[in-house]
Image (cartoon, rainbow, N blue to C red; front, side, top):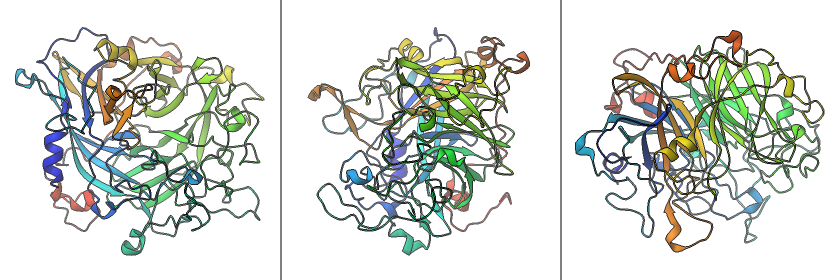
Length: 562
């Protein structure tokens, strides 16, 4: 397969008619694109079948996170791999998928009259048999064309714990082999994988670090967010398993640093089943964590932001900690943690109030994005959408300010169930109602809007109707599944399930229109772009010019930047 040819030909945007003046309120939708779910990535050495028979280099799960690195270049991050195909419930059907991130060019160009009639990339020139796309969007002023440029595997230079071979069985009773990738021996590296049993635990030792789930020597990694250092040379990735934050070299994928989150966020690894299902999510019952502390299973360090000055990371837990109510009826507040990058130390914790979709049922956080050094966009959403069942109703980007009057550090609050943080919690100001804006463009929130809109990043500025606009990219996670079926299982309701990208425009006036309530010193909301010093000399139209950067192999640097 000629990947460059296929991806250039098929990964076209969803768009249709000639440009038109937008009649919708700002921020507004200006482009969308689909990345089909049956493609393979560039790492052919991992193309062999995984334990569940899915190719090890399936190009899926991309929308877990997206990060802008300058020009039209973005990084996209898959999560722990294709575990939606059941094969071993004892380990959550996770597989030895080697964690990775991808480098994409996302070319955003104005629509011209000749573009009228261009179809969704999922149907041109050929679609998956029996499937149909629900994604056509007419009248958007820009075309977004994704092109895959590179795939980078994540690894450690020191040994990792891959669990105990033969300790668990699959759903047919067969012993499960080692979680160590075969590629380790070939490349002499220790790769991170999505296998949930990739941890070490000694029951004879006390439940303290490093005998908790936040041991950085564990091989298991469920990446959920990626951010880029200001010089473009490093990436920071948050993980749900630990929870952790790791720093990797962007060029090679080598882990060079670990940021330790509070031990109260970690759990005791589940040595009974090997499963990541570490607790029931209720307030009082947790079958695998006798401490009754830590993150709820699969709801760990979900969101990650880096401030424009490059000095601070902010980490958001997807849902409340167990001691704060978990996913039970009292889990109304989750936590956002700030970390000083230079020292690696946690600076503060903040309580974030989740929206109640119904009594006792709360939304989750999927991503963070720094507006400046103290204000953040929070991607908060329900679980509804075309592949999640039901019509999406709450998918909102909310603004919060950690320096706002009345907001305080809650690091010393051991349990929100005992001490309610409402008085000092972050105050939310809605910035973008994704459901409302996409509905205004004719999208149906039950079959057109993905349930798992998990990635957000600022992109390049564009000219729109004679004005300069900032851009905001949102990406969806398709769980590596090629298709989805609506709840009624009717054959006519089988749909393609690509990773989706939505692009919105906004400007400072949209922020000014929110007023100054809930902001520090009443200074309002201010967008400060992250400086990306390399963007002027990167040329991804000629990726071979920078092989050491793109592929982690020796190469010359004609400009002497690295």
